[in-house]
Amino acid sequence: MKEESLKPETLLGHYAEARAAYHGAVVPPIFQNSLFTFESWEAIDRAFGHRRDHFIYTRVGNPTVEMVEKKLARLAGAEKGLLFASGMSAISAALLHYLRPGDHVITLKNIYGPANNLIAVYLKEKMNISSTFIDGSDVAAFEAAITPQTRLIYLESPTSATFRLQDIAGVCALARKRRLKTIIDNTWATPLFQKPLTLGVDLEVHSCSKYLGGHSDLVSGLILGAAEDLDAIATGERELLGGVMAPFEAWLILRSLRTLPMRMERHQHNALKVAAFLESDPRVRRVDYPGLPSDPGHQLALKQMSGFSGLMAFEPGLEDLKQIRTFFNSLEVFQIGVSWGGHESLIYAPVISYLKELSPERFRAMGISPARMRISVGLENADDLIADLDRALTLAER
Ligand SMILES: *Cc1c(COP(=O)(O)O)cnc(C)c1O
Image (cartoon, rainbow, N blue to C red; front, side, top):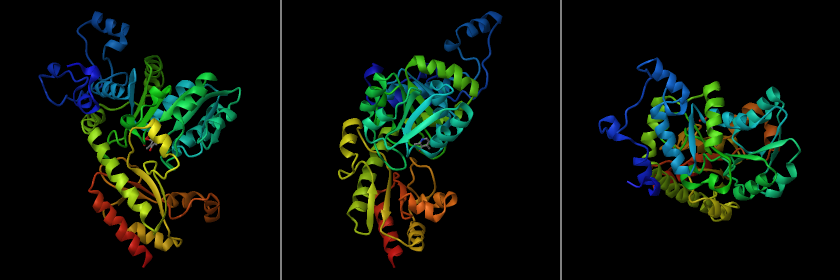
């Protein structure tokens, strides 16, 4: 089999699976072991001399984990991939790989909340790393934010809270010219619908807890990039900070990847239908979804992405918190919960967490509507999802 030219569906089913070595088992076994044993002093001595080519201890490397890393790297067009215990573990490792005390980071106001806290608070307090948070819709604004201390630009396109895009190739060209490193959180689009490494990004990070896992049964993270960077991260941040992927979780991802292209096709199909329904319904004031031709990011999306996933936000035209709650509580197919990217459709109202942290006055001053709803469109039938939203909108307006 010429594995190099395989299309995603075939690649994810077959690539990197040495079936002959596992008695022909169609599903590879889980190497559920912490250590690997050796025949002799000479053998373990040799393994320590060539650590990349031998398995010694699962924090350093494990065959089940490595098989999934190879598949994901191949899918993304990366030289190498490394799995982590969570998306945040991958994000923190990628940041620590590039950053030194005193450095400056440019990123977006609306990046994933914990990544925002990591950069703005944790890295500031522990390593004196400063940061500038910008809107990100304009390459010139990145250039204007560069200082002599700037080392890194951290992107998330589309952002998973506001669904805004950055011009990835444009920002990367600027970064190259000014000798800055770039990292992108590519969780929303998945390596299937967006290939940031081919647009010039240095490191691509993912939360595999979303579509790559896809069944809401695991938490995991991933870094993709050049072998030189990833070898340094493997022996540095991953081996020493120790946020490694467990073999069982890696095996679950292996299972999930076999259906990733079909699942993403269906998420896209359903999300486009749901977004079109919401946009056309007079009871809905606003829809944020780059898959809609009316979305401000749509043209750029067509240029740098090849598909749209299922996470979006919308605002029913409801003012009263009681009505908003009625809408939320009336849904029957959409389940209430955080996270996204699984088979099931989910809804969350960001106002619930904002009101825990901010006074109602400060919340209103931020310009976010309390009616804003975030939905993860799952794999159910799109007509059932639309009927569910339609019913809840009607009940809320009673
Ligand atoms: C969930 C998420 C993360 C963090 O991933 P975990 O696996 O929960 O640590 C990072 N970025 C985005 C965009 C996410 O949605």
